[in-house]
Length: 347
Ligand code: SF4
Image (cartoon, rainbow, N blue to C red; front, side, top):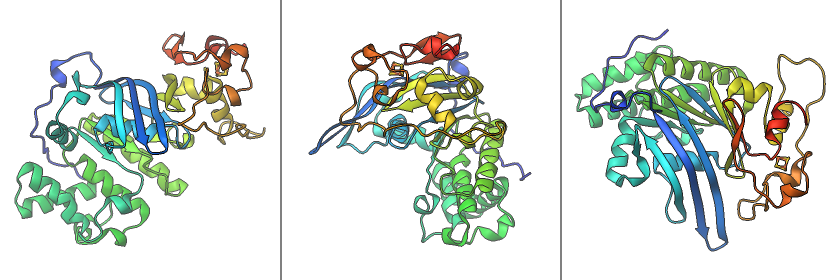
């Protein structure tokens, strides 16, 4: 266990002013890209909420819109060509989509942090990791060089970088992939955000290190009382740490539920196919199944249910009628005409 980190909070929290409300509530988010090649509907209706101290997993194959949606929440979509065309992003009941760039920048630094998948490119190669972490404290908290360096060493210790005090003078390339990701996590939690978004935080790491990083994120979420959003295409890494899950397909949230329900009793045929495609320690024997076909091109999403060309349960109506994500069981939502039957195991 690393040493405790002194509190660095300077921006007042509004959460206490809105008891019972989610920390983050995303409603029907829509993002499109307009390029010379045409229109790409990257996010076509994504809704979810996260409370303090909770972890939400956003699951889906590459290209399903997960990362674009996260960037839209943070207001870091490159525009042009990307545009948020609809929805609300309520953070402590304030719609982030209505804020100025300056207001958003302040919230991003202080209250919402993000970890990207590639720590090597996210860190500046020409500055030591200690300098880069200390910079957060100098810029945002006005600490002296010496105090900021002390805080940086505390944070490296907190994320379990061995011999932290002696490593603040090392450069990013002198750390392993797993240790670099720990440095990124240290930077992300430096200002004690209310919400941490981790976008594929373990993609480039081996399985053992993945588990360590996930355990560290879960521990920090608990200790700091943050909300945590974990975005991943790797279903295996989040099962142990997430409370709830959203499954995305073709830019849309197509299933919502607790992580146990989504993993053990999917309500959408796509989720079911995804779950059958991953190895599970609690299931012996049997074959892993591949999902037929490919995810749709987001510039040409099929009419009707976007999954119908690949769906083994598709019926005629699926090719013409797009199902909304509706409640199919208590606390469960799925965008499938037969979701209630699928979740009961009748299809
Ligand atoms: Fe399959 Fe039809 Fe359900 Fe879509 S609506 S997932 S095509 S059964």
